Image 1: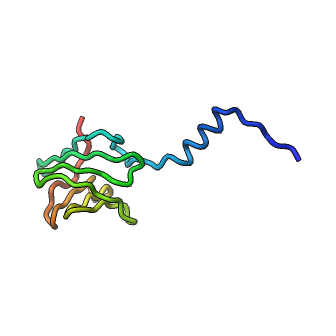
Image 2: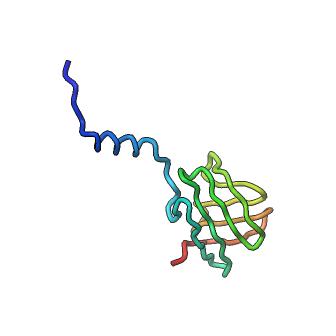
Image 3: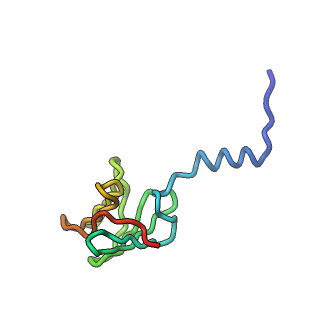
Length: 105
């Protein structure tokens, strides 16, 4: 039986790819980004390493939101939908905090 010997750098790269969960597109792990919305509203969001949670700061306050099986992030009355029609949407207690939101420059 023959075994292939891989360089350490290749093994490290493969391990990193297999163990590094993804951060949602448009977000930077550990850094707040501003999202500007079509209705003139804006809010800030910061993804945690791995993308399991996103912290939002809006007019209503701040909260740490947990990823749900359907891809939305929910917590403390907030719902962050990254795949809403027209862009990202944030609701708080059933009221829109921003629709068709996109990352600011």
